[in-house]
Amino acid sequence: MLSNRTTTSRCTNSEGPYSFHLSDGVVYTFTTGAEYEDIFAALDYNAIPGITTDYNGTVLECASVGQNGIDPYAGGVQAGDVGMAAMRYINPLTNAFKFHKAWFFFPHNVQHVLVSSVEQTNTNSTSPVYSVLDQRLRSGEIYIDGYPVSESVNETEAEFLWHAGTGYRFPVSQGCSAVISVGLETRTGDWRKLGVSPTVATPKDIFTAWIPHEKHTFDLSPNATDSGPGKYIPAEYSVFLATESYEEFEDKALRLRPRTIANTETVSAAIDSSAKVLGAAFWKADGGSFTVRDMGIRVEVDRNVIVMLEFDDESHTSGKVSVADPTHGTGKVNIKVTSITYKRRHHPRVIGHHGERMPLMRRTETCTPSSDGFVLTLDLPEGNLAGSTITKNFSRFA
Image (cartoon, rainbow, N blue to C red; front, side, top):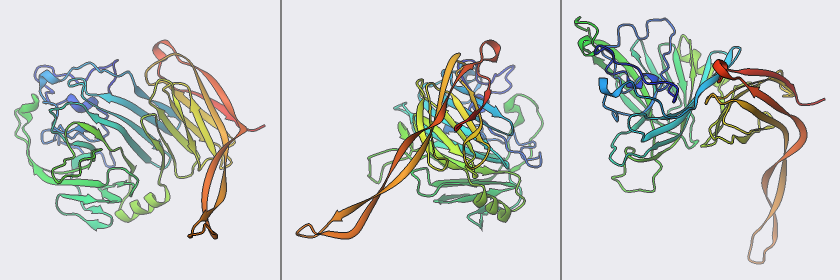
């Protein structure tokens, strides 16, 4: 990841000229260890695995790398076998492309990824915006929603994608990017362009998958495009690792699907399938709040931190909280968790010429905070430990 405490990758002795995006949130996914073997001469360095990018919007050359990061927000929380990472990204070369991104690492080898606040401010840009799922060696069958894929495809409203032990599940009709693109091609690179070897590269069969972000636009003309300047629709997806077949993946995805709670300019939050693990990245300096209906709680913080709550059981009355400030800020953070209850109200609908009251009812729900809950005030680490995780046990009820 990239922050104002780090730089993008280096280009030394003409080695690494295409490495600009290697600090943009790259995620390599391994099952056998051979997923990316000898691929790097043939890699498309504008679509590195795991990144969100304005595709081909930055010239990849030695002069582009080694840039100082701009935003201080990049870090994570470690809480045993679960955790989170989050980054507020600004392209350090153009200062024009930006996004927020959060990675959730839940139990059972399940990941969840939320992308929000995607914006391109360069008025001359013609680049589409992609969130890249992976780019690796092709190995075996590829399935989209249970059907094999043998050529490059753009699939609208796909829910499942699986290849070589790794599966992805996408939301359906939730205001997120609905198109999934898969590229299948044979490429032969040139090791000399990377500055490392005169060896002739061999052809590689490469699998690439990405989410094309749709643009927020009021332009309904046939010439409207999902590229260039403007704001883009958020995206989300879940990753299910180490599955031996499509059938095993789909079964796991149906049983262990994480759920997105919020994905806004203020907070990105999600829970695991058991509704006992909650993660949240608060993006704004003054924090924010959100409600988790599945847990019956409301969470509020007063600064831009990453928080994970792990409950002991389904009563959600006790557990532990882990928190870190990805900007490496110090001082105190206040975390408030309040119990909530939902009440249904029935309102008679008035219909008819004379306003007769008919038995047809309209139901609404109200969320009411209770006095049950807790407030934790924690001192954030300082010095060389700034940005690291602190963990504390809690109990909501006496």
